[in-house]
Length: 612
Ligand SMILES: [Fe+2]
Image (cartoon, rainbow, N blue to C red; front, top):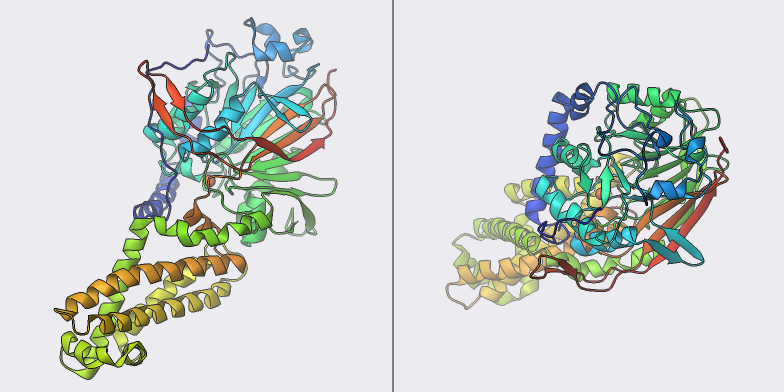
């Protein structure tokens, strides 16, 4: 039975507000620390050293059904027919002829009925969105269009199981808690496999290992892996491989050995579904970063796997690319984190399998939501982004600093003190004041030095996640910097005029500069992000400001009795406001409406029937 204990209370969290200065700062520090220390102590290698041989499951927790090869370089293949099945096990229902599954890796080949499994990625963020996806995943069946889709017997979590930073507490509040509440009605014990995304890696994988690699339960789901990567044999010669490329930097040697061993178990005609946390094929084209994709390509070449489908998260939207007669490549990072936009997906991908091979064209076959729907959200940043009050305040402090420099430039040129300048210039109107401020500022070296720093920042922002040459960020950075400099001059001029006749005028000057500066600087910054997104840049930066909880997605898979794989991509257009309360018995109660899933994409990949 999977019912969680009622005392397992947790705190429903708000979605992370990435533009809050604390998060911005912490994210930078975390990424740097994790990457730096990861180079010195790779937790994957430590884990591999601790589990050098196959570890059989404990006798009171028998594996049922699937061949489990999630464990070691010489993976244990668990045979369903050797294990006493418990009544009502999902697997038992799915397999009509368990005795047909022989030994030595031949188990699970000949399922006579459908086998279902699910995929979700980028999930542990705000309660409303994470829970809304979890409750759909946990339902016995979902009905979309004419399809009745039963819950998967296995759930794969594809990375970024928690935001912003992994810890036991964050996993409990943002992931395990919502999934536990959502799955209270599940009587069976579906399995769970997970690979870490960059956010799971920010503590060097410590909390991920506690959560997913120690035979614990994750809500109603049972975890079975011992490492941060796995290979699971599914019916009819289908395999599920989840690889852990850390920060896409490299695949460690023990992992490579593990998958070489796993590939030895592939038989003629077997097909692999390859899961990675990041769609490096996409960044390879979009950000012109062939290096990360090369790691994946080499991995496939070295293992010799016939990869029918690649699935990844990381980007919080849905898109599928299709190579004629070749692999399908799906991004489905819609498990709960902020929607990151779908207008930036290119219409096609050109991917080279080896350095000398001709590029292979992939076409964009499906996307959710439509780019037009995605663009409709852009302008909402004008009122959504300023809700990051800390960010607005930080921009206000910067605006005051610029006003201070500019008034200093005017005072230096005109002589006297700020009060004198305000008295002299303040009565001449805003335009005259602006000309004074601009003329003084543009000849004041310290101000110009700050402008140069502003350009460096704006240039770096414009190049974030952008493809093409680094020069592409120059015009964006230049326009943004110019807009902010003109804004600072205008704010200073208005503050001078506004403070004229007031006492003490210098105090009023800074007060007006702070209020007007924070508002206008935020407005210009937001407008920059909107315009840049319309021109193909900084989509992610815009969407972390919008924090749209809708447009979620997850995948449901079916392997039918003929061995064909059906993929059902399910989308949630809206996520209701959901609130968690606890009754006096410690039972959770969630307010709000469940989301209605829609079928956003479906494909069928033919398999090679084995053992039927
Ligand atoms: Fe993510």
